[in-house]
Image (cartoon, rainbow, N blue to C red; front, side, top):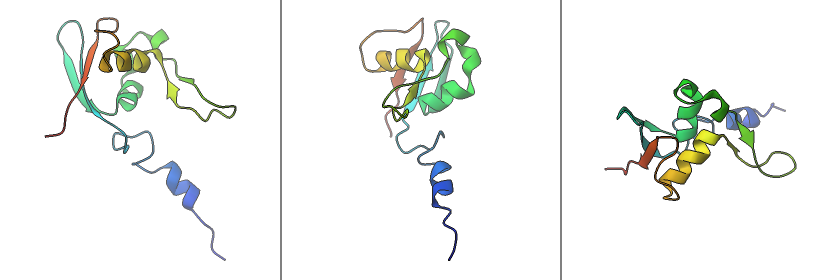
Amino acid sequence: MQKCDLPHKIRHSPKAGRFETNIHAKKWRLTCEDGAFWEFTNLYNFVRNYPELFNPSNVKWKRQGGKRGTGGEYCNVTAGLLNVASGKTKSWKGWHISTIEPA
C-alpha cells in the first residue's frame, strides 16, 4: 500500500493557497493619497507581503467563522479596502482601490 500525499499537495496548491495565483484572486490597482499606486493580483497576499505600507495596528490578522475557525481571515486593511471596492465608501484612510478588468 502506498502513502497518499494528497493533503500535502492541497495545502500547497498555488490555485488554492495564499498565492498570487489563487483561483479567486482578482487584479487590483491601489492608490495612496500622494498618487503613488501599485497594481497586483490577490489583495490578501499583497497586504501580507507589504504590511509596512499600512499602520501596524491595521494589519493584525483575525479569523471569522465557525467553531473550528472555518471562516476566512481578514485584517482592518483588507476589510476597509474591500468596502471601498464594493462602493460602500469612497476611500479608506486615504487609500483608493479598484479592480482591473481583464483585457
